[in-house]
Length: 179
Image 1 (tube, rainbow, N blue to C red):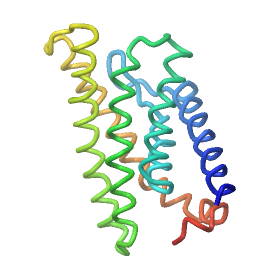
Image 2 (image 1 turned 45 degrees about the vertical axis):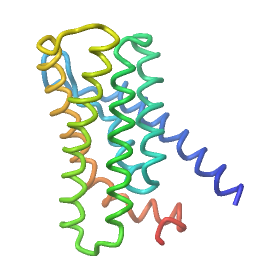
Image 3 (image 1 turned 180 degrees about the horizontal axis):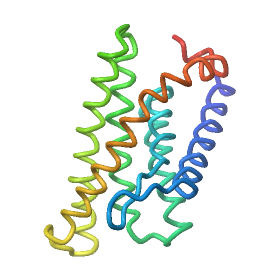
């Protein structure tokens, strides 16, 4: 049992590193100051296969390390809280829909949870944290948070088919996930 816990911690650490590397190395600009954060691919994979705790850990700690590398803690608290919410909701949805045999239906449910969780996490929690910490009025942040919401939904939604595509590799490496 202890060996399994240690393995999961190590795997989550690799997920955090993958989040940071993908966020730093593959920046695809889409809006004024925003880009597709490809670190969300790692977060989605961990939500999909390892559940909400791993998804929250990879998304939350990934953004903390990413922000420390590029800009210190500026912008991090809101994004951190947003990623915790996204990881929790998407991870729980992936876990709850695991037994659905129709992959199209399962993917649609997960993508709906991506939209919902990203709305709550980015448009709600991230905005609220930034308002409290930086006393920024809603009108100053609304456009930027909508851009972030759209970009994050796109990457997370595209990540779901990627999760299916890598399924043979994941199940070969982690046979315990099949059950």
